[in-house]
Image (cartoon, rainbow, N blue to C red; front, side, top):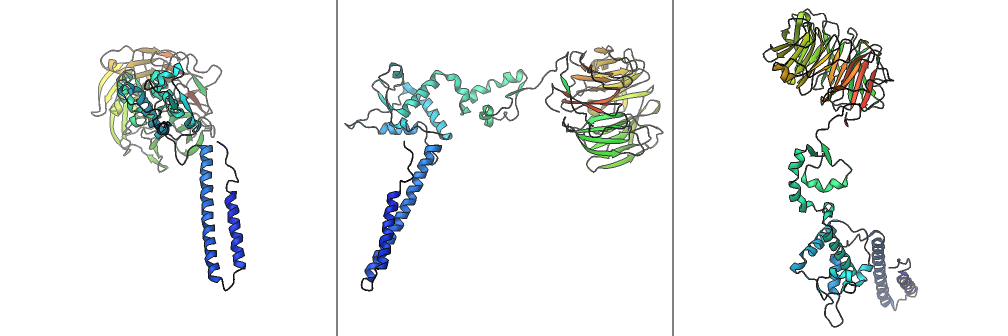
Length: 558
């Protein structure tokens, strides 16, 4: 095929030019005698000129389409792969009037015809980018070459068109390589086969990635770079913890006093940091800039503890005061609450919030536990231990409460009846100083002033078994703080009385990570810690007023 000439319409333009000259000559030579005759000739010439102009425009548009088809494929009349070749092949007639060949749809060739139909369906859906016009003019004798004789549909067939030859080659390849069905865009043929594999995937703990659970989008699996399979339960390995140090969470504004509380919001992007400088700061955590969002100053309350309500709407702030504060994140308003009616406690600095955000439990005097409604901020009940109370932990979605203290026993309280339904001694403990329950409530950890942490299975403990499933003896000073991460695979144990006294334990194997804390890095005196909801970030607050931020590589989300 040759490129289209730019002078293809020059003859028409010459004729139009001559008509203009004739028209002008007639106009100049017009006289009164031949007026009518001249006018009729002029009208005819004008009509002929208009027709020529329309013809020229039509030819130019037609040739522009041809040029576009040549450069960019068949835009205006898409070629359907396989069909046009059949039509041309059927149109080939010999000189004696008999057809050179015909299409045989006999039952012996069902497989070959099905493959051709599949190709035609694909051609209907997908636009052809380029068509080789030589295929239409090429005739191939498939009877001459031995290896091409298998492409014949009948014994006497010999000459076929180029496009038909390509179509039969493709069908033969598909017939010899059935394993390429996964690349077929038509997934309807595979629906019955895929159903049998669903049960086996569920047994292995394998679930489809997001967006692929619907059968309508199965065809798009191989068109993206997303994970095709996501395992629902990924286990963290013991031994060495893979982590990296990031920019400090409060790098934009560090605290002038020790950090006593750090906590991630439920959206994993907002971090709270509070301390003895009487400020509560909020940071947007991204691991790079950690932008400061807001700071709240409390003039009469050095903060001993601050915590989000689990629903994320408010922050409860307390110190060594008879009252506490509630900061509304939506209204950006601080409310001062207390003293509690009928109580004489001079400090409400230690408290815990239930997971359903309904109850706040404060440590009181002489073994009393004060229960406060998070909605009305009023005292709704009290619980009484035999000894002093030093630590609390909620379980069973806020329906149960664990407490420990000076008598070395762990109490289990039912908050619906507000009675103690179980009490047992923590093995080897004289004074209990810290309690922590796992997110699913199956385990709890109890720390003492000797630095020993006992980990119990809660069901076995309630059933009468007093032996802990693991005793951790890595700390030598009083245990002040403990925290399970979101999937209960890591337990953090902290003591504020000694530098770098922060240990991370792999819960499934009950072994402490040997590469934590970092050998060449100083954590100073750690005072508090929190894991992000997805487990990707870990924030550590210390006595130097800094919030150290770490990335745990095992977890993909913050």
